Image (cartoon, rainbow, N blue to C red; front, side, top):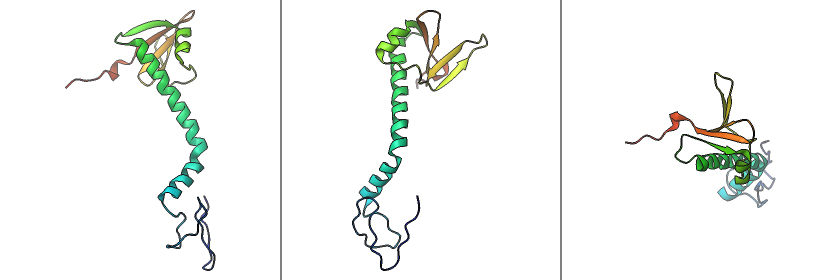
Amino acid sequence: MAEPVWSSNEVRTCLSCGKPLKGRSDKKFCDDYCRNNYNNQVKANTNNYVRNVNNALRKNRHILESLLGIQEMIKVSKQRLISEGFQFKYHTHTYTTTKASTYFFCYEFGYLPLEGDLVLIVKKKDHQPTTS
């Protein structure tokens, strides 16, 4: 973002609302509301994309968690995951076993695509809650 350059006779205006500015010579906004509004508008496209991806990841995690419950692992159909709103294209990371099986994780909950229409859902063991 380029810094505005004003002459001493030029009327400076708020970058957000356009009202005349009073005070410091390097002032760009009339108040915090205008500053926040301007910066939110500048970052809106990037923020929307990141927000949508994060929401999809959280939803995937919640679906895996709710289906797994207290079990260590469970098999469900891909169709069941899809019907719950699971989006297979979003995951946080993968883990490949020594037997070349690749698990896809949404944070600490993961799934392994199996033959046919089945998926094995698991939870990483190192993310178990500790009790005090």
